[in-house]
Length: 427
Image 1 (cartoon, rainbow, N blue to C red):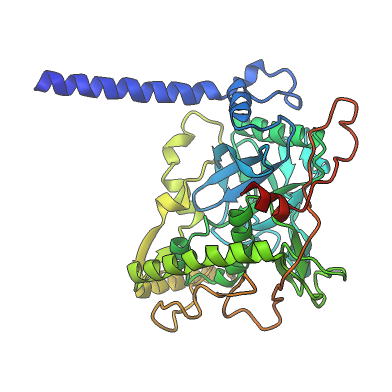
Image 2 (image 1 turned 90 degrees about the horizontal axis):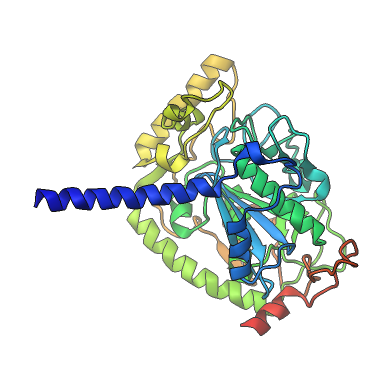
């Protein structure tokens, strides 16, 4: 029996070693890279694209999930839907969950950003970098400040999303190839976490919950269409997949907006399942809420990873690994103490968006917690009445794409039908 047990352990070890070898072989040996700006994607990624029916130069989008510490690259397939082609562990991000508010708060941005070729920095001191575009129109309209917030290498962050050099080499190549294919702008979606019903319940007491409910509308639109949503800003709020005969003004009053009926119906169906999931999660986590760990707490769980690296190498663990579910009363007390300590040490609270927890005013029932739907688009409950309520619409496809020939690679790609028509047909 003991021999059989040892044999089993040996087989498991070999299997794990094989898995690790596979992962390591997927990383590029940087010493062999002669031109990092033009370094092609690894063969295994190219093969996976072919398997999924993706053109090498077809459009991409980028999604970030802070809590999980994950960055995903999604690419358009032949059906003009976007699916994950590569996923990376974020080596370091600073601050806590929540948006960047002001210069020096060490927060990494959350929101919807458009990256153009001008955002690529081939000469970064952090190997390679892509500027996130913070502040965008929403940030600017809300008076948020900060600059030079990047996706870059070197695994060291002060408001950025920092990867390993091998990872940023691949991410840069994805963006470069998409721009060469004619994509004008790559959408970067930065979320605090995957915006599932369970996560929304767990974080319902966060002071950032209303902001996150607004981001969730864009998240839902992608989940339904598998296309990056068209993003506009008016009345200092994000709106998604809306068309109007009047221009959008980030700080001004929203024009009359419409939503395509097919999208409206799909969102209603999606929301019906979400409401059921939220009710189940609210019951599951009754009296409990999630403690979002500090940056120091995240660093502590991966401190051993720093051994053998340069002093600047500063990985951060995931908030999932360092955080925990707590009783609401205990969580409120802990966060109040942390806020008080910040005031004593620095005179002001370093990050007012995450320094405390909003007190629960009632048992975690559905009313006022997960929001409502109007005309098929999620509108968070408790948001002021001046928040725009989308109504029904056709819009111009923001990411029309046709794989270019060699002769037309530098010309603007031809227009495709609006995404909801294409999408309905493909169903």
